[in-house]
Amino acid sequence: MRRTSIARAALAGALVILSVAAAVAQTCTATMTDMNFGNVEVALNQDAITTGDLFISCSGAGSNQQLRLCLHLCEGSGGMDSSDANPRYMNNSSGLQYNLFRDIALIQIWGARESAGNSYCASSAWTNKNLVLAMSPFADASGNYSTSVTVYGRVFSGQTTMPVGSYSSSFTATSNSQSRFVLAYRNCCLACNTTSTFQTTSAPFMVSATVVPSCFVSATDLDFGTDSLLSGNVDQTSTVSVTCAAGQAYSLRLNQGTTTGGTTTTRLMKHVSSSATIPYQLFSNAARTQNWGNAAGTGVNGTGTGSAVDHTVYGRVPAQAVAPQAGAYSDTVTVTVVY
Image (tube, one colour):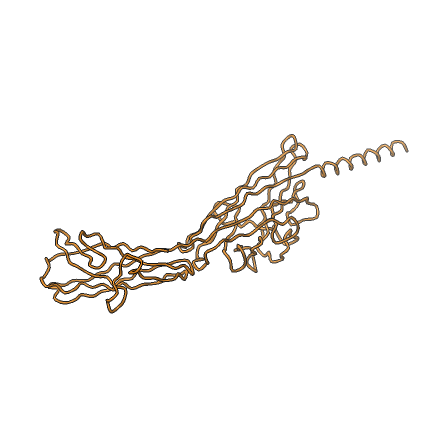
């Protein structure tokens, strides 16, 4: 009876040793491509979108064993909103706003916490839950598993006052830090906020963007209304609106129009059905003494604020010695913003 008891104790000990050895042998690695939004024209007030590729490789698991992979993404070196992870920032809290998402619809933010509990990030400001990218895949018959995951990035519109320059945020730390991306892995299937029994590996990468000089211009039509003899000056105004990146110098210029014979000092409106024309002029001041032309010295200069800046175009049809042919007249002038 004693021999049987001793034999059973030895067998149980052998099983424990084998289980520990299998757990230690399991390893996973992760690599993440840098995510570069490229040139961002904030004056256009549009989102900028990019993607990155995350590659995961695991080995040493049991045959067809289910794994637990938890991909925790901290706030990045640029930081994040003080109460949650939306937005993240490049450079600092007054920098370019962006975020990284787990889905192509750009709804599910990729963060570092599954539920209340421990976190792999230094900050305790994570109040949004279910942000971690969690996976529970099965290894193959050889105990291996590999996959790739697309990560989606968005620089948010509405940042028209952001100065021109380079912006970035790093996820390069390998220890507990705000600048960390960590893959935590083990056998299935504890919750991702349980940190003590997971092994970890890091995958450094950078997020970057360049805010480049940019402007957007629009204009309202200049309608001189209805007249008959044109025995006196006819004055009207229109508006050219320009939005340029904050601090961006620009020059607004008006060309000669599309009617043959027109110049930047004496433009012409053409009759709708004949070759008859009516001269008109465009000025940059209310007194109508400063011609608004298409050359550097005759344009209107300004500096971008990130918001729309309106410039008034002062138009005049001068008095005519001979009454023009009755009918509608028009011309098309192109507005160019040089920056």
